[in-house]
Image (cartoon, protein in one colour):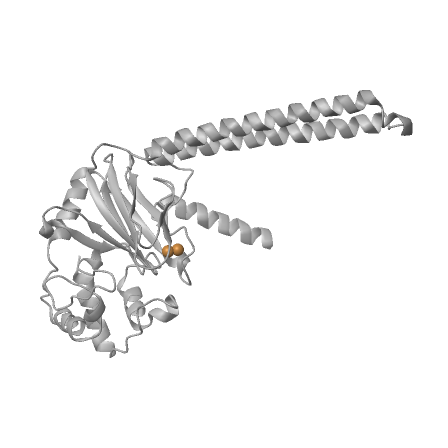
Length: 338
Ligand code: CUA
């Protein structure tokens, strides 16, 4: 029974990794930094496995020899034996230091290679960690061309991207296992990391530093796509929110602007200008809700708006007691924001 349960979980994990939607693995590098970390991981695994085999073999050898020739009481203090034991300890110590030195050098070489990918980035993205979501802003010298979204990053395949990191509250950690190692976001301290995806795909990123109650529900999706698809995506993100034309969605826009939503969220070209929560201008186009907690479907969206505290206890968003008609209208409007 128990075995079957474990087999089912293993099968589910394997299946979710195959779908690609939930792809999160440091052992399947899709970029140069993750590639070198992956190489270092295999080097360390190989060395550790080698050391383990040698130690266990030596232990078994000694046990067998002792069984064949048990020690006589007067033999234990012989000078010969003591000298031999000393030699073995010195050699083993020297080999251990040598092995650790090799690992240290490999580690330094990999760390050096990770610091910078190019002289200038093709794209600069500012990522701010909040309890418990990611604010994402695409920098541009022309303010109208800046793009703001949440919990999702799109980037063109094969291009070096500079990610500037900062925290709004506590320490978080930005980690896209398929692309690069971890980088901590420390309040009051700006830091940066580079990523480059050489393979199209959707890579899941998980906050890697315990940051409070909902640390586990603080994910971000990195979508790596061919240049033309990326250009189309960012052009769409730069447009203001669509104006609704059916009655339900028009009513939903009214609910958003007159209700408490507008105090915390921004939807460009509407009265909603809040800066506390995620920007919702193109929320309908996103993969997930509540930082990777729920799939982005109208049903989950309605549940999230009505009662976020049951889904993500402690999150900043309060429950909303809307009438069923208002809730349906609001969801219809938000779903049009693609
Ligand atoms: Cu943010 Cu853990």
